[in-house]
Length: 68
Image 1 (spheres, rainbow, N blue to C red):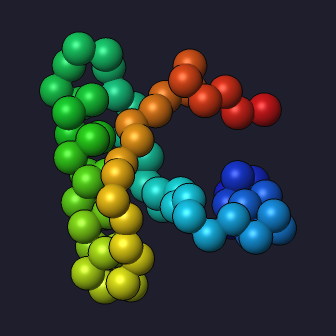
Image 2: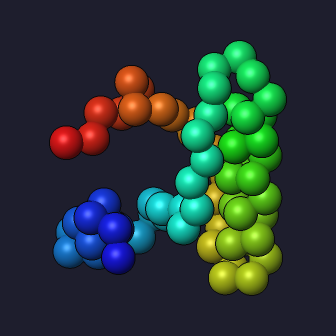
């Protein structure tokens, strides 16, 4: 289990999901678009399979949300 996932579980945070995959995006390239599309695909799957309802999606990066 990743450190971030463990911290979220310990704090009982249920409205955040951590992807079990990773990609190395290059800004202003197709890889960034691929990353976003794959993330949206995962969100739609969560909504359908786990009944995890949401109204909004926030796309943030490490510069928007610094992680220790």
